Length: 578
Image 1 (cartoon, rainbow, N blue to C red):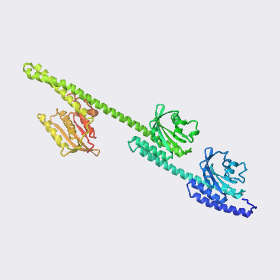
Image 2 (cartoon, rainbow, N blue to C red; image 1 turned 90 degrees about the vertical axis):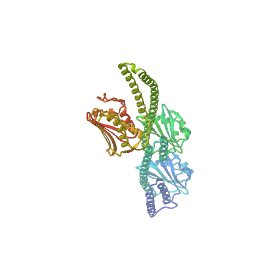
Image 3 (cartoon, rainbow, N blue to C red; image 1 turned 30 degrees about the vertical axis):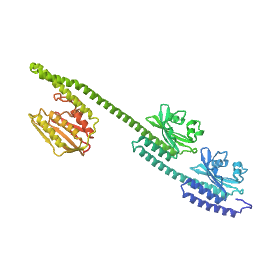
Image 4 (cartoon, one colour; image 1 turned 180 degrees about the horizontal axis):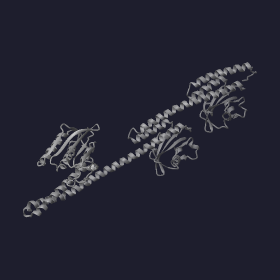
C-alpha cells in the first residue's frame, strides 16, 4: 500500500510474500476449528495483523438485513444491531460482486456510508464477502483510523484469497455443526419418545416432554393449547405464568393457532411484532418476539396446538429445528390420542363397574323380594302337607309335593345366581392348596349320593396349586359334578382328575367317558344359561361351567374343553400362579 513515498516492485513482491505467509498461518488456525464464531474471530485478528489495520467487524446476512456479530476496536454496542443495504452499501456491493471491495477514502466515497464511517472514525476500509455454497452469508470489514491508505494489488489479492479460504472453512464448520446438531436433536427426540411412553403419569409426562423439547431447540417458553370448539384453552405451559393454565382464548386472541388449525400446517414467525397476520394481544402480553407453531392432528382433525416462544430477540429458525418439531408433533399427537383412548377406557371401565354394582344391587333387591314370598309359600305348602296330607287324595298330594319342590328349586336357583354375580368383583386369595385332596373329598360325597351306580374315579396324588381354596373348591366341584351328571347313562362311568403340561405351562383336567359334545359347540359350554343341543334331559341351572370360567379367569388363568359326541369330554384349566 502507498504511504509517504512510492513503493518499488521489490517492495510489492516482499509485501505479497509476507501476506501469503500470513494467509497460510491464518488458514491453518481456522481449519483446525469447527466453531464459526472462533473462525471469524481468528480471521479478523489475523487479518488485522497482516494488513496493519486498526479495527475489524463481521456482519452476517439475516433475511434482508445485516446483523453485526463481531467487532474489534469498535464500540461493543454495535453487536446485535441490524442494518439495511442502504445503511451498509459497501457490504451490499461485496455481496453483489462476490469480490473484495477496497475503499481508500471512506469519508467521501459513495460506495460506503460516509456518515457512519465518520462517526466510527474509519478513513479507509476493505470489505471481504464471506460465502457458503456460493452464497454470500456475511462480510468481513477491516478499517484504518489513524491514516488513509491506498490498497495495493497484493492486499486486494490477499483479501480475495482470504474470502475463498474462509468460505471453505465456514462450509466445513457449518457441516460439522449441522451433523452435530442433527445427532443432538435425534438423540433428544429418542429421549422424548422414551419419556412419552415410559409412564402412565399423563400430566407429568407432558410437562417433562415440553421442558425437554423447549430446552433442546433453544426456545425460552412453550405452551400446549387444547381445542375446545372455537376456543383455545391453555393445557400445559413451560416457563410461562402458571395462572395461564385453564385460561381460554378466542381465535382472534391467539391468531397463530387459528392459522395453523385452518391450514393444518406449521407456522414459523421470526418477528411477530412486525407480522400483520399475528394478533398482538397474546404475544404482547407474554413479550414474545418469535414463535414456532405446530398443530397437533389426530385422524385428520386438529385437537391441540404446540407453540414454542422466543422472547429476547427475533430468531431465524433453521431447517433442523423445524424438522425436529415436525417429528415431535407426530409423537405428541399419537400420545394425546393414546391418552384420549385411555381416558375413554377408564370412563368405560368406571361405567362398567358402576353398572355392575347397580346390577348386583338389583340382584340382591330382587332376591330379597322373591325370597320372602317363596319362603312363605314353601312354609304354607309344608304346613298343608303336614296337617292335611293324610286327608288328601293321591293326585292332590302329588300336586302339593310338586309345588313344594318347585319352591325349593326356585330358592336354590336364586342362591346360585347371587353367588355367580358376586364372582365379578371377588379378588381371590393366594395360598397353597392341595387340590388332589379336595378332589377326593368331592368324589367321596358323590359316591355317597349314588351308591347304586358303578363309578371308577382316578384322582392323581400330590397336586398342589396356588389360589383361593374356597373358589377353587367351587370350580372343581362343578367340574366333577358335571362329569358325574353326564356319565349317568354309562354302565361303568370313568372320571379322572390330574395334571399335565401344555405349551410349557401347568394345566389341570377333569376327564369323563360320558355323553361328550360336538367341538363346534365348545365355546357355548361356558356361556351362562346356554344349553347344548341334546342336553335337555340333563337338568341343571345352566351356570355351573360359567361359574368355573369366571373363577379361573379371576385367578388369571383360562379354561377350555375338548370332546366328542358320545365318547366323553375333557375340561382343562390353568392358573397363572403355577
